[in-house]
Length: 118
Image 1 (cartoon, rainbow, N blue to C red):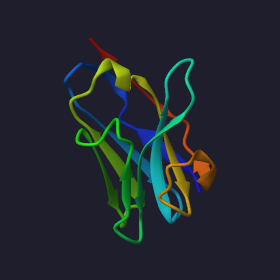
Image 2 (cartoon, rainbow, N blue to C red):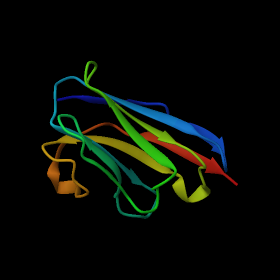
Image 3 (cartoon, rainbow, N blue to C red):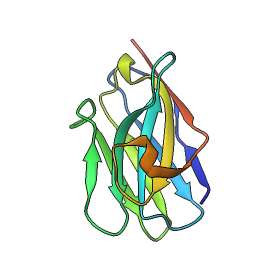
Image 4 (cartoon, helix red, strand yellow):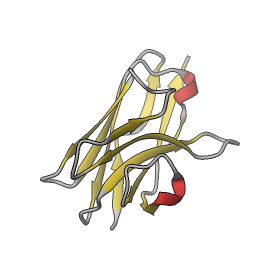
């Protein structure tokens, strides 16, 4: 499975961005993680492609929405009300479970940068 992310960029605090991830194959689940400079990679959101399972990190609940398009094997992350704390490289991942844990994902995208200015 190959994953290609798109949609990162620079936005002011309070603004919105939409990330997309296209998978070459048909994984069971896809997720988003992020990594800020000097910090560990952390879970953001995940969705199972064959059922209604969706998970969010507490830090993004109510602001971020993950969605899927099974016809295109694509997952998107709509990010609203962004803050400087959301600044990070965002990575798409694919695996067997809509998990919050990094080690449950077998495939990773190259990452896309999101920068939120204050």
